[in-house]
Image (cartoon, rainbow, N blue to C red; front, top):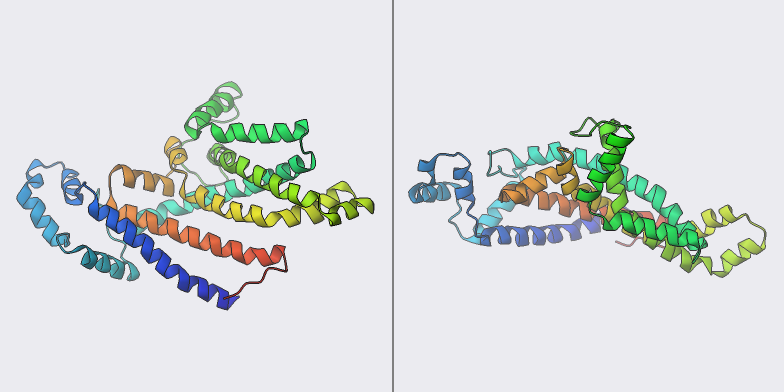
Length: 315
């Protein structure tokens, strides 16, 4: 296991460096000047002169060749210096460290409920193939996926807040166990639910017709026991693969949702960085997103042998 983890870390480093190089290159070639953005944020017209812009660029080392700037950035990164944001001159790592735990809690909770609801529904749809139950499950989850979150959120607010009066308007963040987290978690769950249902259904259909499933049923094993022991377990590997990417996407990609409910998470940091062309924060967001993908892939590979002993991890 340790040999496998070591090999994955060694392989992850050049991947991460390649992502950093591409992202840094795009910001370098961008037509938006970070110095002009930084000076204009001070709202002092005299600072936005050509002479002053050139002076600041020289002080920040932005007139150096691209590779020198990139190497200097990577060196500072390994020393724990993620830079400072252009707008407001805030520490990039502190901004991400404050927002990431919030999005992490939301993403993990939504992924848990997505798996808890989506996998049983997918197996049920496979067992009841081409029945009204199958069509209903697939249709409803597809509808939930196709409706954008900025449309679905107001609809749910009207139903739950105005008509049913089950809650107040959730804005801000008071923790995962607060009432404010219920609606955001619901909306995060609705999006990938159809993906998990369809993937589980497809994997289940491939297992239902196997001889050992028919033999178990022929021996009088109860239907739910056949589903739990034979169908679900053998259908989990492709579903777990998709579930890993869904989880990473939920953590890093809840930009619209956090903006709608004023949640100070990682998505809100990302949205603000891209909207204001805050290049240091964009680099930090890219690093965190890339690391999340790498960690997710590694964890998925480590889960495979637990589901199927025939799968071996090789370094």
